[in-house]
Length: 416
Length: 184
Image 1 (cartoon, each protein chain N blue to C red):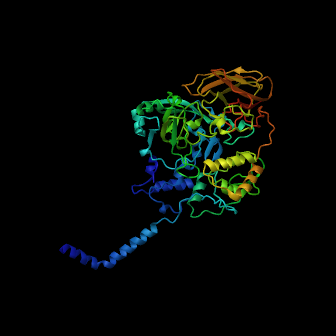
Image 2: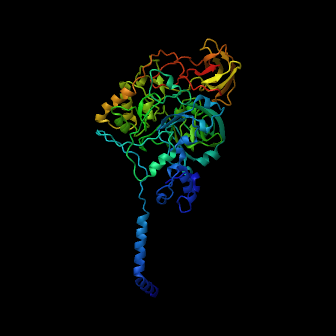
């Protein structure tokens, strides 16, 4: 039975839970374990595996649970206010089950596939010592963020605007690993493989295995990461190792990473094919579902922004101006402008928009608005990227799986 | 040789003691074998099941971890509860899963929450064709079994309770839902 290294202090020399551990467990439960003396050696009761028994234990209690099997949890906009998203406010998007145990000492990253000169395997220690580490703030946004705003309704988690985060990630550049491995010029795509378990419990059924074109894989900011915000990545977010590829649908940032295949064709792993993370090549009438052959893979996410202060529903005095703030991002591009409106888009006021900390991080913005008279208002925010493309105000192009809804975020305000 | 003979004599003298100790050790080993079972996930329901399938106790994120563990540690699973509640939209629902009460709810609860949470259904609003498409996709790619005779009553339930939302919508934005007003 593999156990998490950091829990070894819970067991005595003979491999049974220490009396002190049992006492902790009893107080956690509020009741003694009836058959505590029968617990097998090295068996860690579920309550100690709080992370995988309940990843919500360490999350802000106001995150919204869309699904609990598999875990899909979004962050209300006002809880995205931090410049760098902390672990307790990071959204969760899982396709399968979190791995039940992690064998840290034997964790390996294998690079293989048709387009490697020869397969190579690294331990975590290899990755941390043989390569220069880099740290980047990276926007990780679910491809389905905004899906709740599509009508007719589509299948999938009904994210509003909280399926996005920008944490600080530390790891090794994938390009440095691939330079060490050696890839041939037949390389077209990468495909990752992780340790997550399929919902059916079948260990041979892959959960998700996606990838990106080789050019995106070789960018400076594409990381094989082992730390988030300076600490171990939380189990639910991919401990001990994951890919982090900013600006594209978060499903390319594979978690619990053990293998990356260098492909000589577009990767065809689980959730790369069919309609997963794809939109119609030819725009469709809302509600129309064309055949699979008419879909293309989503690459860079479109320009988007969020108002993180104030929380929607603010009653604010007429006498004071209202300070607003939030973030803007634009996939592979940069947000160039951010405007706010209090009159449903009749007039727009330019916000102060900062540059990103590094490429593919989000950008902070702030503005101050005054209101002409007491009453009910909606405050809208609209970002524009460096190619002049803005967020739409209405529901954008409908697509059968409900991806990439980047319509403006808006909050309700009452001026009293 | 002499030592061996000496050892044999000692063994003969203490044969009852040695035998008793061996029997005692055997009994102690038997007594140490765990009698409680580790929690076992619900078995997959055969396609032909007509009666209500054993219900897997589902938990939401809001239930404390200790309640879930206490259930797992107990020697036997208790019978499924039929507790009901009124949800936020004023609909009577099964308390454990949030599924709307109604004919065939138990079939859906039994077959559809083995792999994934009921919350997947609660988020969904599809017409019959789309519900069929979802089932076929799960059968094709996610190891869902043949639902057999239960497929029609399951579809009837889903379309009735999780059918398309009656929204006349032309693509412009719906008004924001009334928020909880605050003064922070």
